[in-house]
View 1 (cartoon, rainbow, N blue to C red):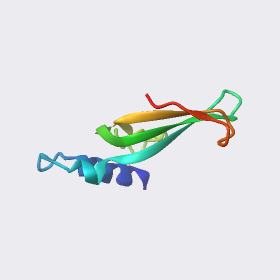
View 2 (view 1 turned 60 degrees about the vertical axis):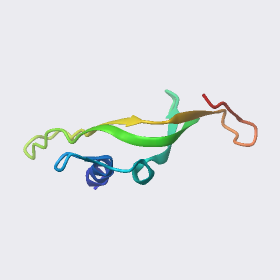
View 3 (view 1 turned 180 degrees about the vertical axis):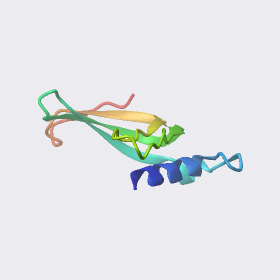
Length: 96
């Protein structure tokens, strides 16, 4: 599932079993965050460049509980680029 996929990505950054750090060229990825308004309509998106997990916690797995298991992951990135507006042909990109 998604937890295993995220854990593999984390292990490519840092392997807690061996203490070995991975190569940035192998673990840094591009990402896209889509933001929605309170009405559920798409508002804007943010492109992440050089994105990688800098902290990862699988949480407590209690098979008897009815609550969903929550995975906590902190993403670090080299740069983000906000994409403003709904129409990609007229939206403005601002690199910060």
